[in-house]
Image (cartoon, rainbow, N blue to C red; front, side):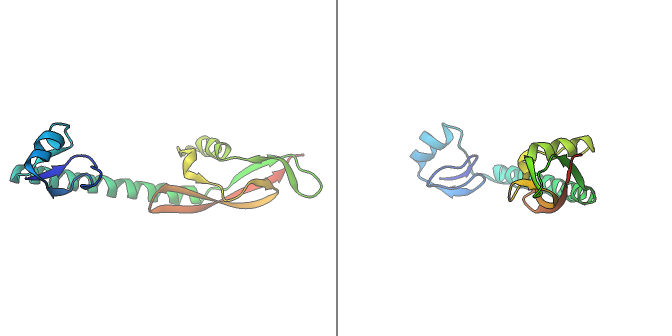
Length: 148
């Protein structure tokens, strides 16, 4: 029996895959647990429409993220921290602080999207990677100045 998977099924396939399984397995497990629907012209049509909608949403989200990335790239965030004689700061700048400063500028970014490659605990300009989408990554300048 041919079925379209609604969820990932270990050993069988991923969501939206069309697979051939035995009638008993399909009826007693996949269909009963709502893991699949029987394959037909109508269900194939619905699947194609759903995939098309998802693709369109993904395209719109990607364009939105690229536009946001262009705007954020122009910004330079400045943090003031107390520092010792060697340029080492007392404390460091975290992704949460970066997120809060971006929020003050009007950008809503999840702090998990901000990747710190190292601890920002010295004076100067640092590069921080921001990942808005799996295809939209960019570096942003973070400036740490000494607090007087």
